[in-house]
Image 1 (cartoon, rainbow, N blue to C red):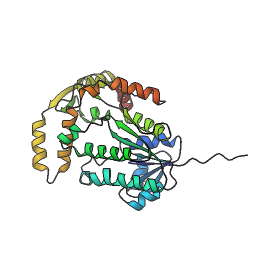
Image 2: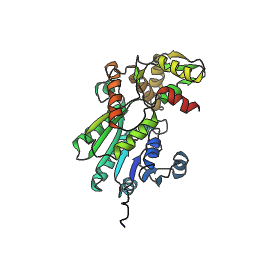
Image 3: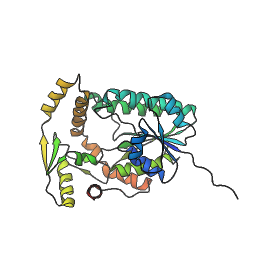
Image 4: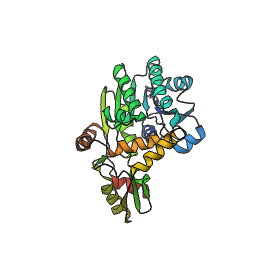
Length: 304
């Protein structure tokens, strides 16, 4: 009797991050999964599913090469958007990714899924000096020039943004937010990315990941209040004091400057792009087999 063919493992870079842990979890129900982490014990606390955790650093050529050996594909979901890592942002989000692509080519790993920003336009990141946006566009250009079977998933801001800005009965929103903003559940990102990396028919596609609708922060606050039964009002936090503080502290606190750029970009989210959310969501619905998470569902999941 023929033995079942052993499935090649999928490597998830950034597998303990906000999106990465959900990608690893969704993949673990289908195939063997590898996650590269600097702290194996900490990673094991985050990843409760049967995932192979390899201790190493994404900036180390040896670590990445070992992790790639025998892999069937790679999902790249790296972020240095934290006070501890922001000084290494280019090293982690750009240099290590380009190194990974070069090593993947040597190891004949052709399937690459890259988590990027929701939109691919270049004007706003350049205008606002937003390094994250510039880096992601640089990686996307590198993929376009490559021979990989690649797919870019442009993830909208996480629905976590609404909860992170909530303190008690107030949602404190720097700048007040845009009229409409697409957001996505990290659970949905995990499921879609897991399906995408196991498919061969999405070559060269850039797919936006969003929830069913774009909402303003006031609309989101009302939706959350309706679920929790607790009043929640939006308070607009002026951006000018934050910009001044970021400028003054930039030499010794680059994270604040980076955060202010991200918030400014958020407030200027292109509304022509927000208007395309129904079409983007419809594309997801016909391309992937999943049930989309609404903000109400995410709220129940969070407060269950």
